[in-house]
Length: 350
Ligand SMILES: C[S@@+](CC[C@H](N)C(=O)[O-])C[C@H]1O[C@@H](n2cnc3c(N)ncnc32)[C@H](O)[C@@H]1O
Image (tube, rainbow, N blue to C red):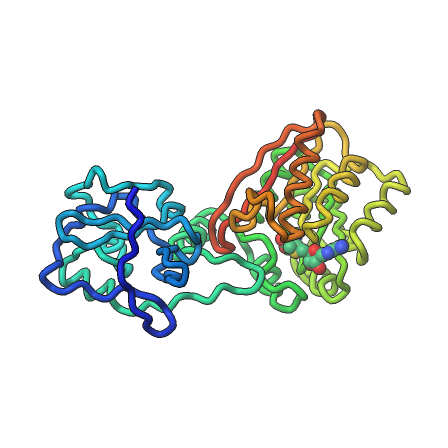
């Protein structure tokens, strides 16, 4: 594997490669595999390593034998590390064909004018991870095509801006997934740790239907007020209990009262408390109940056992607890989209 760093210049705060001189341009890129993707053209040169801004330390720069240029790719974005030992002659450069700035691939003049225009990087909103334009556009495509978000859901999602954690609600397609999981499991009673503006709560409340019940825990009164407005607007306020306070204490109160078991539990509050919430959930569910835990990938940080982020350690601890519990079948799914790179655990009590 060749790990080479090609020269770049600083422009407008972004590190971008200089436009290749005309003599180096060709219509085809000799090195780029067809599936080549680079989600960011921003590189951190301080380490002397060409790292994709989103996926630091996993980028590779491969010499292009025909042009003596280098072709840089992020191994994480492409899903493959390519060594350049087998040049893929004739493969169309995906940078150029997708109208993004091509770092080194030679290109036609028409492509060049499209790809070398400055495309401002979108700032990463609070409570989200960086996401590639392609991930966002695919999310938007599927949400528009398949997810039946009515005005009440849109309002609930957008009203997250009035809460203490803007943008922290699940994405539209994930909300739909939660509703589908509840319906597939025939859930009539759903428990949620972490209400925020009630966006996911609306999905659950609609999924359980008339006569169903959703109990949701929220620490912040400010968020609970917004959530209640959204639930009422969505026409499901009468089937949802928003309980304000510490989720651990609220869950203990339900355990003490011996409430009817829940069919589905969604754990989406403060991540360091995940193991506590799982322990409570096991007392509030029955065999066959489904448990979903959100934000378990954390832009990939979950696999770093030495992470000092308590949220990462909260996820790892709950993974250990699930793994050690022979009454739980579980898996984890990575997701990319509007919210960046994250994922969820889905478990079921035997
Ligand atoms: C990720 S947001 C929930 C998003 C919501 N489930 C959705 O998808 O629409 C997490 C929420 O948990 C709440 N929270 C944080 N710590 C909590 C605690 N100890 N007890 C209860 N709620 C808590 C936060 O105030 C925030 O509203």
